[in-house]
Amino acid sequence: MNIADQTFPAVDSANEDRAQTIRDQLRDAIVDRRLAPGTKLSEGEVGTLFDVSRTVARAALQMLSFEGLVRTERNRGAFVANPSPEEARQVFASRRLIEPGIAIAAAGRMTSAHVVAFKAQLEEEGRFIAERGPSARRSEIKASGDFHLLLASVAGNIILQRFMEELVARSSLVIALYGRSGVSSCGHSEHMNILEALENGNSERASALMLHHIDHIEADLDLRIRSGPALRQALEF
Image (tube, rainbow, N blue to C red; front, side):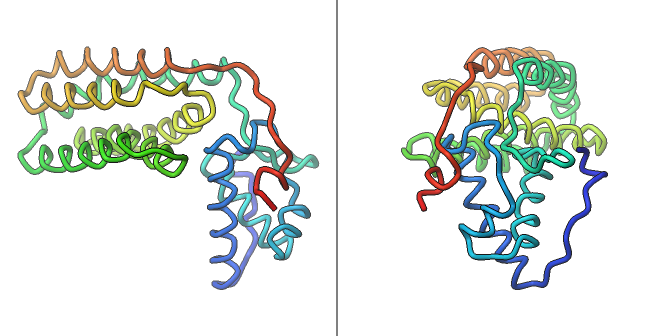
C-alpha cells in the first residue's frame, strides 16, 4: 500500500504521545534485528502488549509505515519491511545516479559555515562509532545518513533533497537489517575524504569519492534471509 493510500487514525495528544512511544520501541526492535523482516505486527497484539486501543496501535504502525520500516497490505495487516535483494540493489543504483551529481553541485556552493556544519556532524558520527551497543549502532546509522542529507541540502536542489530523504531512509533500513559489522570506521573516513574534496572545491574528486563510498556501503550488505523471534519475545515482554 502506498503512503497516499493510507488513512491515518485520529488520536488525541495523549494517545499520540503513546503511539510515538510504541513506535520508538518497535523501531528499536526492528533496527536492532530483534524483529526479523517479514514479521507480522498485529494491531491487536501490539495493543495488548502495550495496553492501548487498536486505534493507538494502528497509529504507531502507520508511523513506521511512513518511515518505510513497516509495510501494510490490504486485508493482511502490517509486517516488518523486508526489502528484497533486488530492491536493495535498486536503492543503491538510484544513489549512484543521484549522489555523484549532488556532490558536484555541493562543491560549488560550499561556504565556511557549511564546512563547520559538516565537521560537527562528522565529530558526532565518530563519537557513535567509538561507542558500543545497539543504541550507538542506531545513532551511528542515523548520523551516517545525516551526512548525505546535509550534502543534499548544501547542493541546493529541493527536489533532489526530497529524493535523498527517501533514499536515505530506505538505505538505513537495509543497512540496519543487512549491514555487516566492521565497515563503520571505513565509511567515516570516506566521509572525511569527501568533505576534504568539497572544502577544496574539487568537484570531480568529490563525485568519484562519493561513487566509491556508495559501492563500499552496498558491498558490505549481507542479504541472506534471516529468521527471528516472535513479537512478544523480541520486545521482551
